[in-house]
Length: 292
Image (cartoon, rainbow, N blue to C red; front, side):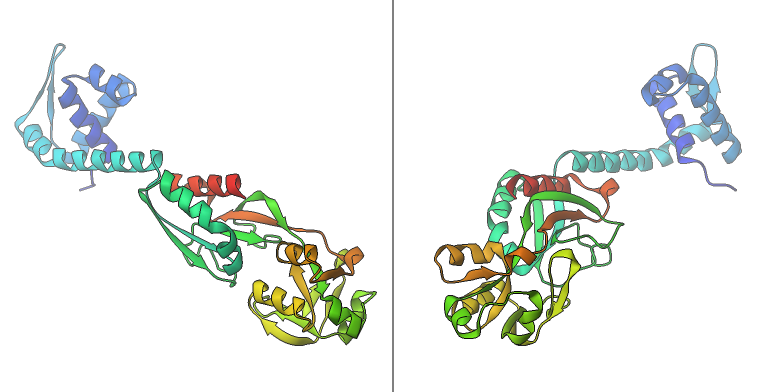
């Protein structure tokens, strides 16, 4: 025997609850003929008459009464589940997973997370700070904050106003000792300090797509440490303006090769699937857009 269509079962239960086909149709938002067809289809599937119809009333047969008793708890459970999902889609709740580069997260996420916690106390936020390029879908992340071009066209991005500009910096003492490079190629003769976490740490990109492979004197995985070592005169480094600007203002370091600087890299919020974005994820994305 074929299984009954759930839509047919719902129509039958609604006819009984509303005591008629017309009222059931109004409740379900469909035509009276549709309700009648669904009930008839259910009876045909079950091979039994469930309702006795007259011009003025609809009553249950004995089989119909027993069938109603069995299916009512299931229908009630389905409607309760629908209500839970609907409620969840209105009010942010549940758990969201967010990932960002370590130092970006340490520098900017504190206030965002505090404000998000105040606004949406029912949401659990799981933050993973890593310089590794995570796969949002395979690793079950809801949202990521990323610098630079997006490689995966299957992701949905929302561009932030903030961007990251990278420049070449060195201390006055270092430049006095080693000389100031006039072209990117001359960096190959300098003591270069690099970020170890980058995918190609020994390759620096300049305007017009020019790429120079440098010889690392030191590799670290912290821009903050890299900036301090540059200011101490250990070598020449490629730094985000975000870190370099305060030290440039204090004249502890200065920028070289500024005319070759590549365009700033955009900062984006990346979502794994825009069609299934929950209110909790959407609220986090909106707050990041507001804050950054």
